[in-house]
Length: 487
Image 1: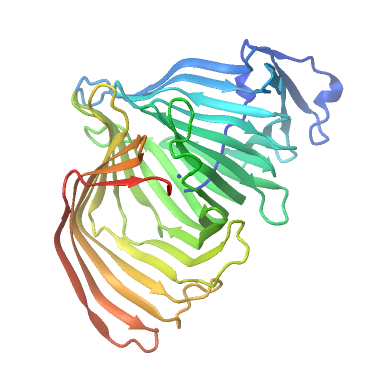
Image 2: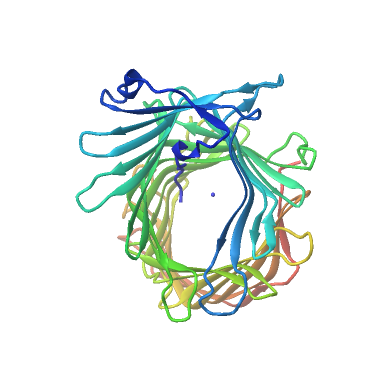
């Protein structure tokens, strides 16, 4: 679960099941003190439905001529703008959309005064096989003056579209993901940053003749996923009163971050390609159980430029899924600036237990090939994930004993080493079961060496302490990892 959150405003969702209210000169002139347009939408459907669709399907162009129907389909889509009040009625029966043009020529479309929003889809199908039964964002609560906004920015180098989500304290939603009769559920909360009244997140979309670009904007506040549970078909917690705990992140600083998307125009190729760049720091990420949590402070992902990717749907008559390739990786850094313990709300934080870094990650001209496939067999859902690293992959490993506010102080004691991996291959299945999350090993193998192991400070290393070599490490087929709450 990068991370940002953004949802497109509902100005386009006025369908025959809703009624538009008459407009007056006064209501049109009360947007940011200028002339503008206000649309008040009243929900007339008995269940509060705004939009329904039996299926949305994306079919990939058959440029290779193999004749296979390669597609991704979402079934039974629903958008609802009310909540059951528990007494046979509904809570929330209208929302307001305003359209305004700012002094510098930006078109601003804002949806507010919404009490609740539900977004649901049924089966997600690849090439005729289902990945899972359903996914839903339920009863998204827009507390106070929360809103979602789309702005067409009038900029000198061309128009961009900004999507903003502003959620006041108390806003949240329920998430549900169902597969093979087992449902993953959680509660999501939006928490304002200290001194602010609302959580804020934004992304930008721009386009050109060769594709589109999605840029990450600011995120103020934190995003928590709480009460993570697995439930049976009756809605009962499979583990009694126990759950998997809570996770969250916040205080994101984006120096730069974007993703480009365009058609893969290489000879004989299908699908899409593009590039990804990131220089992002996450001030706090955590995992919490009860009233205690472990914190990952000042975690950073820096690609130091663009890395490339390709994605393509697959349906060869035997397997369906999605295949991807990542290359151009030559200097990627993953850093955790501090590891601490604290109370559940983040108070009474301990001193740092060290800073950790995987730096200068380099594929050395190779690539990472990833395949995500539906599981074969009638009635079988879940997925299979295959990963292969071609050639030699290397990175520098650093573990430092540093304070939180200066995680990679050059004078701090450290363990450093160069790690080299070859022949890396991993194939696994991921499935929700009544006994927990089941991660099965189909095949796993690698060769690795840990070179130039050194201990000490930058000024007084005690020389290399040795080298570790691992040849033909493998895990036997049928091995598995099962994740479940403490009993």
